[in-house]
Length: 116
Image (tube, rainbow, N blue to C red; front, side, top):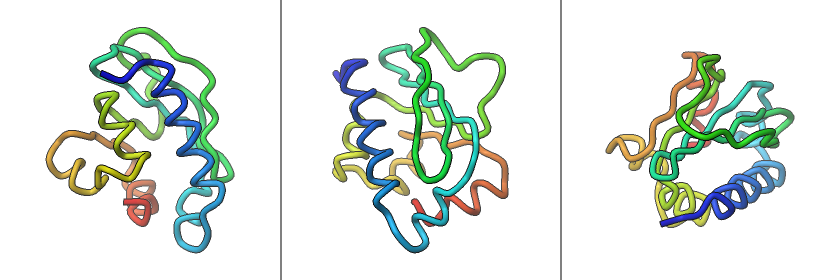
């Protein structure tokens, strides 16, 4: 089972990857939105912001996401987060099978689809 520190590091690596991306991926990640990533098995939620192609984690809160919902919300197990960031798990397949949940407004989902 992944640890809180490993998940936080994975989010930092994902941020670095987005910042280095080019073309359509860079354009899709160039949103300015609040973000939460709930790690179900650790019962922790990372909150932060996706802005200018980077993810900035501002807090790690115990339990489910706060009542004030982020504009982009991810939910998954810690091991799945690590596998996604390492490239060992395909996001689209994980999303289609229910291993990963992504919730956002329709416009954001359409824009983020190139990241999938």
